[in-house]
Amino acid sequence: MVEDLRIRFEAGRAVEIEGKNADVLRNRCAADEGASRLGEVALVDREGRIGQTGTVYFNTLLDENAASHLAFGNAYAISVGDADRDRINTSAIHIDFMVGSNDVAVTGVKPDGTRVPVLRDGSWQLETPQPG
Image (tube, rainbow, N blue to C red; front, side):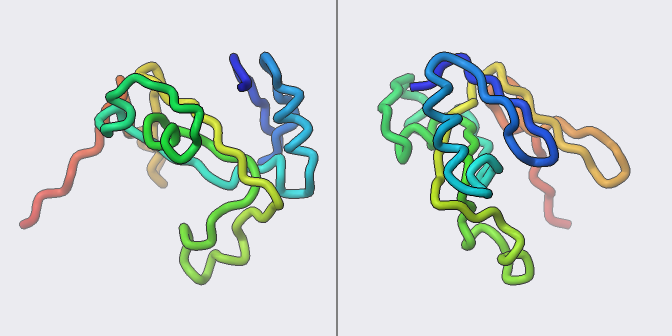
């Protein structure tokens, strides 16, 4: 387990990976050309059943449903349309790591530069458009 993870990116590539046991992640990110690039960014709120348990299962398939997370390496082709499929990151690895907590604040930026709160205090801030 890597603790106190800090990552610095340049031109879309992780160029510094620091933290307790970070050497394991650094070695995996050297596997191939796409390994040090992100293949997944997932925002997760605190309302899901798994997150509400307050338990870390040390099983990615469970834990990634409890917290926002990123993944180095391969992206899932199913996550993009046909026109963008050849642009996704490819790698022999796909390593998820959780970054979410109620302290994570996510802000979106519209094309006109307007900043919009997306996630605050573990809750979605986006309003659902009303019909009409």
